[in-house]
Length: 195
Image (cartoon, rainbow, N blue to C red; front, top):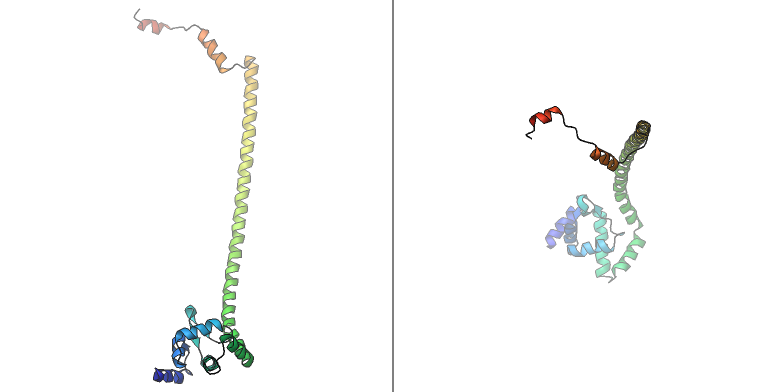
């Protein structure tokens, strides 16, 4: 394991190391390095790659080695290590802020584009809704006009009926009158009757 760690230390200046590779290089477990990343967020300048994986450049490896030394030799807690590293290496947090700022700017640009597309979509949608509302208003006016015309025709028909018949009769009155009328049977009926 020590030989593999030495090979990774030699290679660390050329490439970025994953959490596992960095842990091997400083002779710690990957779980310890992940814990340091979690607890010392603003101190370790890890580069976040695709899918959220973290990588370490030579500067970040120096910070990891310093953390290991402070923890093992100086017996400091992670909070104390954080205070020491913030006081001694202010450029770390600045360097760490530069990498995400590019990613953040790209995300903001994408968000702005999506927002502009949403605004355009919303304006088209509002225009369509206004057109539909206008059509519904026109249909409502047409229906109201038709109702008024039907009411006027009904009133005119009733006036004509009253003018012709004098009074309006109910259906029951009309039925009673028709019952009292004699039924006249025509000559064809008489031909076919068997009386």
